[in-house]
Length: 300
Length: 147
Image 1 (cartoon, rainbow over the protein chains, first blue to last red):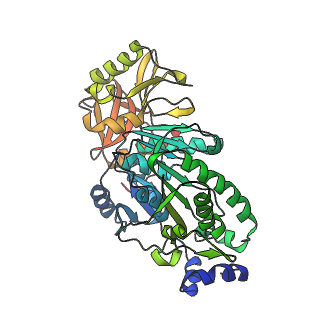
Image 2 (image 1 turned 90 degrees about the horizontal axis):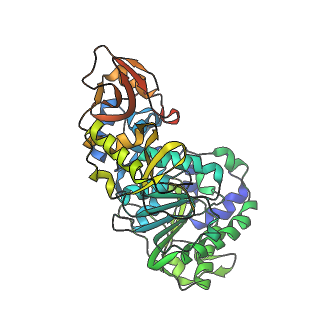
Image 3 (image 1 turned 60 degrees about the vertical axis):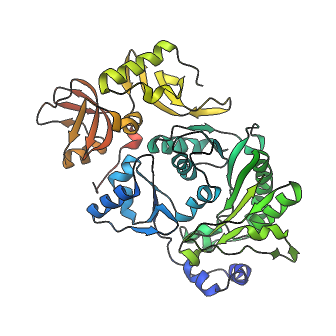
């Protein structure tokens, strides 16, 4: 695959091994799923897949996550809602946020089609209150379908522009922001062929508003996890920097034993970011054989 | 879009689930109850004014009570009666959305049943004699090749 030269110039200098990044982008991202613990245990699902003759590979950083095969979509487990087909990096925000049965209120601000919401429901053991919001009414149907299929009952679906979301003090807010999705090129090579930096500024503008609102929805001591699936520093570190300049937010280091995170970008286009931004994390596709991702964990 | 159900409606659903499936009402009484569109009776978390949908529909009440597939799947471990167990070929046909003619009249009585395969809850069907009518929501039906 031909990577646009401007893409190489823009992102090559951000990694230790640009060649590894670029060749990784030319390969498809591995299929993966998460066991829905509201309906099954990882051991039960692993046993059944062995019976089907389908290969599974566990990952070190989550007992529920498995690297899988395309046939997983034609298994009884998929029908039952015992598994949820989900790319590995998409599972990171609820894990990094530390969602658990003790978490009383979670707001998933950009929820559809529900990968992270259904994961939160399972992590909460169907307790507490889980608000799944999406601004796009056309995507609410898929969100509702996935919540029903996975047996999530502690949920409310809302269809608001998060910027106008009512005050509801939340222990955890997830802002998995709409982004230029450069990290998903392994899923859609045609998107890479037509890559440009045009959408970046528009996304960054919305992301700055979303992260402020996400922070404002937190109860005292609550946790906001901001994430994107893109490489552009304008949509990642610069958005965190903007939050730090406008709110009394504190960044926490991101830890998930067994997963390889990379340091964020410290400066971009000649401007240095707030030193706290160093606690955010990047996920480069070649380091864990996943899509690209960015995460920041923020404490109110 | 949702409102509180009448106490009679809630009690009718709980009584049906207990009588038909042996489900202990305490499994659902600590949840919040709502009445939705088209006779849906819903359980879920406390209400929020901005909600478009809430929780999970347990049943539809239009004259009689019809349990939902998602509720029977979630409560399957506590279901004590009116279960129909299928073999592998029957299960593959059922999850695709087919109705089935069973070889023998099952132990269940006529009415809604929980359909299982290998102990796993496939969902809701309506039994009449040896005829099993598929009640899986259309969107849930799936071509399953591995079971």
